[in-house]
Image 1 (cartoon, chains in turn brown, red):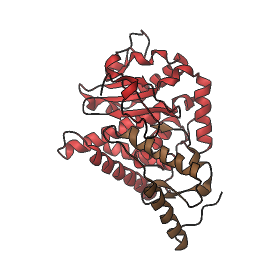
Image 2 (cartoon, rainbow over the protein chains, first blue to last red; image 1 turned 90 degrees about the vertical axis):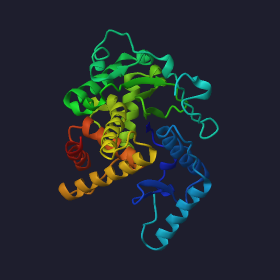
Image 3 (cartoon, chains in turn blue, brown; image 1 turned 30 degrees about the vertical axis):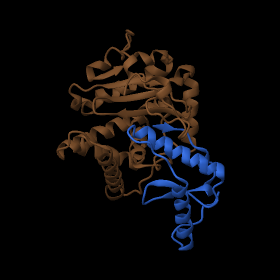
Image 4 (cartoon, each protein chain N blue to C red; image 1 turned 120 degrees about the vertical axis):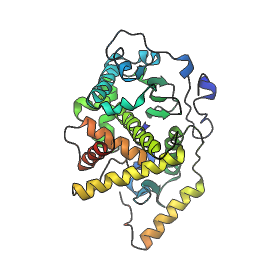
Length: 83
Length: 246
């Protein structure tokens, strides 16, 4: 599936790229609107790709990505995202 | 899949993320338009369905010609199909940001355009592609290929599925199920990145959309390879990978 750019990627401060997992995650600066956009984007991406199961991105998963970001920044393993 | 219409849908996304996609495969039939390549693509097991008849010719024809050109230049893209068909169709997809998708099940493969293409013109499709490429959201395409970007991206998903099917056969599987497919996609991404780094001496890089997941990495890189006269080292690495594995 090919989607146009989602809202959560309009601001570099809202997301980071997890090189290891090969996907995007959110930072602690992501707004509620950015979180909603992220959830909708990955649900659309996953669901269009797999007609057999319904994929739902939970708030816990989003929060886990944010916590991972904070940890990596605190450990100096990831530079803080800036716009 | 089949004949469920708009209310239930290809997959009922209603209430999940507000995306609904119809499934009218059983109501669709091969286009009867006497136009090349609609008449010639079936020779390579690609069937253009009547649901595409509403797409303006200035959009549909370059896309179909591009598919035919890729098939003509790469017989390995269709030789393995045997009696299986690839259907090129449209469905109603409620989210207008979704231009197209590739669908596969145990009996057929489909390149599905959003039926809202019927209300667009060539310029508007090219403008969307230009904007997405400028933002590095999509990989680059030459100016005369902007109209084909979406189709070639979806065709990339199809080619990746060929590779997965071939590997599944080697592994003694009748059908590449979901978990197998995901694993293979991850393996391919790792392998292509390795070729780029080790053989071509470049850090692999794709578009931001290509960075969303392994399947999109392949499709975006494939798209660049076939729509740009000056593809990146990552796209060249994919070319090497295809030569070695198809």
